[in-house]
Length: 122
Image (cartoon, rainbow, N blue to C red; front, side, top):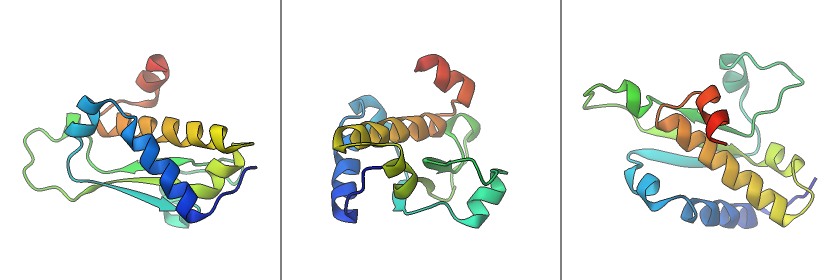
């Protein structure tokens, strides 16, 4: 486990976001990017996660592919979970890569990709 301060973690998040392809980054509209220590009980229940399952990030919203002309939707939300991400890393480089990969994964959900499509792209 590699632990960093909240400020350092946010810096790594900002660097990861800046590395997203500009075409994808510029198309993100009305999306909040949040950092929490751990997923809430409500989030875990909603996803039906067992106690032994880890959640690194979560996209909550209406994917672009499902909006079909909706004009008014609540902001989408991508949440990164700091403690589980730290548990996946042994050093800053690994943590930065976990953050980058998790953001990419959740942004893919924003664009409407499911886990199978994301795995194929990876």
